[in-house]
Image (cartoon, rainbow, N blue to C red; front, side, top):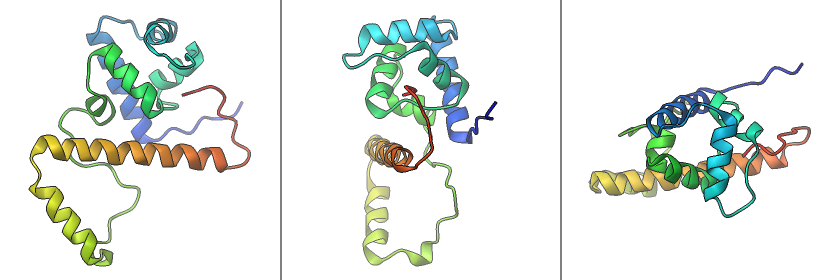
Length: 150
């Protein structure tokens, strides 16, 4: 049996998902989550297996499904993904500020001048772009059988 590799981001998402499900009155049941989700999602529905992967931290939903999931659980997509009022994403490697160009520095200064709600929106969009990029990289990697998980 192949051991599933989890990362801290998907495990943290799973913990927030289980908490949001409890607060919304849903059991941490993959079948119940899939059924409730599929009633609200206009695209191709998810399987109980995909819902189980979300609940257990094996995978995370794609941005369109994250939006539907957050509406179902009555929590913002940002809070479901990042947690409430999270301002820093965990980085895989330390940021090398000395490698920033003038444009990067200017962009960061402008970002820091935004009000908290606008900063939150920007973090959300950057994160969605990151998720999309990760998804595209997984699709282009040979030998990975993801199935219908997100």
